[in-house]
Length: 154
Image (cartoon, rainbow, N blue to C red; front, side, top):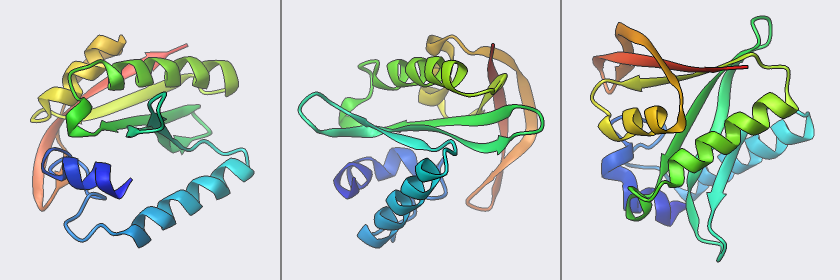
């Protein structure tokens, strides 16, 4: 996991605050431990994307779950060496199918900085509906970003 993050830091860090310069094995262990707790409670969590040979390709998951409105945020990242091969698009499609078959969620949102061209393409290719641009919606590294909101609905 650390290898994949280090390889991809330049591409991920501008849009993912968790991917900071000091990200360490301890951070990765804490993340894995949180996922195990979430799974043990049947809560929605993040999933690793792994190739057939066991190589970590990235992660895709649901977070910021709003149970009352049956909504969650859908996020993803793929290691740099695997970008442009449909990995994220496939993972997003599979996660959407799983979420609608396995949970009571009605809406999955993808919120992407207008500056993140790769993630914008993934959302579009995966079949998310582009709903609009939210002005100054994200604050990343002390700077406001406009963000495009996409959705998948049942």
